[in-house]
Amino acid sequence: MNEVFFSPWDLIILYPMITLYKVFELLSFPHPLTFSIIAVTVFLRLLIYPLMSVQIRSMQKMQKLAPEISKIKEIHKGDAKMIQQETMRLYKENGINPAAGCLPMLIQLPILFILYFVVIDIVKQAELVTVKVNEVIKPEFLKLTGPIDQSFFFFPLGQSPAQLFTDFGIFIFIIPLLTGFFQFIQSKMMYPQKKKGEVKKDDFMSIFQSQTLYIFPVMIAVFSYTLPFGLSLYWNTLTLFGIIQQYKVSGLGGLEFLRKNGKR
Image (cartoon, rainbow, N blue to C red; front, side):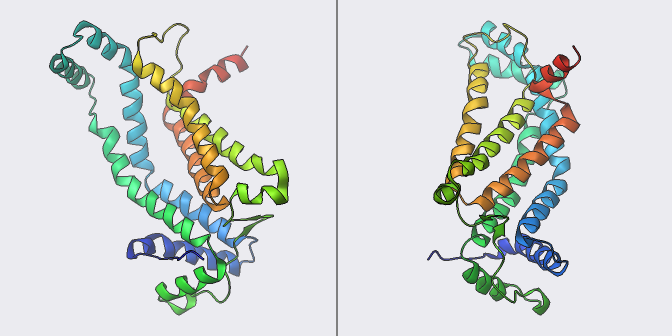
C-alpha cells in the first residue's frame, strides 16, 4: 500500500477540494469527488486566467515575428552576438517583452503542480485518504465521515485505463484517445495557420514545432493510459479550459482552416 502524505502547501488545494466535496455530497450529487476536482481545477484556471492571457498574447506576437527572426539568423549566420542584438531590437520595436511569456508560466506552474499531486494522493486508497485528510483538516465539520467516493460512473478514479482494460476491453481506450485529441486541438490552436510552402526545410524551429504538435499529444495519451483516471479528468479539464481561453484570446489559430472550409 502506497503512503499518502499531504504537505502544508497541499492544504491550499485540499481545503477547497474537501469543502466542495462535502457540499456536493450534501446536495446528493453523484460522484462528488469528480465534481470537486473539476470545480477546483476550473477555479484555479479562472484565477490565473489573466496570466495565461498575457502568455498567449506574448506567444502570438513572437510567432508573427518568426519569419523576420529567421531572416536575421540567415543574414548574420555564425554571429550569435549580432543575432541576439538584432532579435532584441526587433522585439523592442514591436513592443514585445520575451519574459512576458515566461513569467506567467513560472507563477502558475507551482499552483498547478500542487493541484496535480493532491489529485494523485486523493485518488489513491479510499480508506487511507480519509484518515490522512482528517488528520490535516482542522474544522470538525469538514472532516470526512466515511471512505471518500472515488468513482466516476463505472470508472474508479484511482485506477488507470491499463488496469481497467480487463474489465472494459478496448472501450477503455476512449479515455487516453480523448485526452490526446483534446491536447492536439489545444496545441494546434497555439500556432498560427501556415500558408502552403511557408515552412522551409532548414527552418529548425518550424520543423520542431511541427513534430511536437503530433508527438506531445501522443505522449499525453500514453501517460493517460498508464496513470490514474482521476489525473486524466484533471488534465482534460485543464485542456478544455485552455482551448476555450485560447479561442477567446487569439481565435482558432492553426485550426482557422476549419472556419474557412465551413464557409465554402
